[in-house]
Every structure is written in C-alpha cells, then in structure tokens.
Image (tube, rainbow, N blue to C red; front, side, top):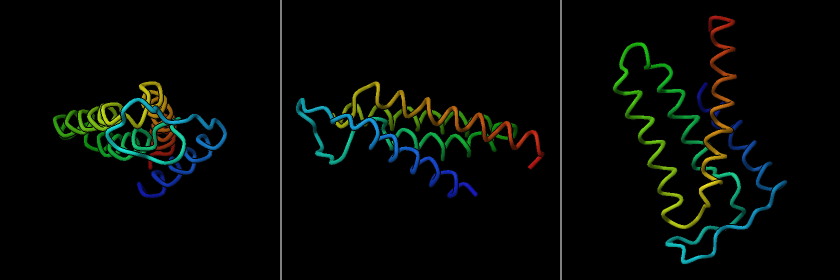
Length: 113
C-alpha cells in the first residue's frame, strides 16, 4: 500500500517539475543533478514514506515516529547542503507531502481502513 502512495507522490512531483521548470542552483554544488529543481523529489518521497510509517507507529512507539521525522528533516537539509535544491524546493516538497498525508489520514480515519 505504501508503495502506491510513494508512486503517486513521485508522479505528482514529476508533473510539477515539468510544469514549473525551475532550474537547479548553480552556486558550487557538491553533487551534480540533472532535471528541474522544484519541488524536491527527495523531500516529497521521504516525507510520504517515513511520514506514513510514523503515523502508523504514533500510538504505539512515539520515539520511532519522532526519529522518522528527524530523518525526514535530515534528508531535506542534506539536499540544500549538497547544493542541488533551494530551501523553497525542499519546503514545498514537505508541504505537498504533508497535504497528501493529511488527505490520506483523513480517508483512513473516515473509512476505518
């Protein structure tokens, strides 16, 4: 089930990248990436994957959930540090995935899935 949601978010990301077509930062990147910058696919996919896992663990093991959110944050920071994304790319990726995750959680709770 999670792989389907990760795939959906990855498709949304690629559509947005094509529509927005924002170039990547060109100020001394530590890693060379191809393709467009906005929104960050790593930020989106990591947030949806680890965010869903954190949601499922929240009632049982809050420490696991908190550690997963820390991993998400580190992934976002690493993309900025490597010079392959602007901060706004990463924040937008997180926010899009948060919106998707809220929609997912509301559907799960409404239909008791």
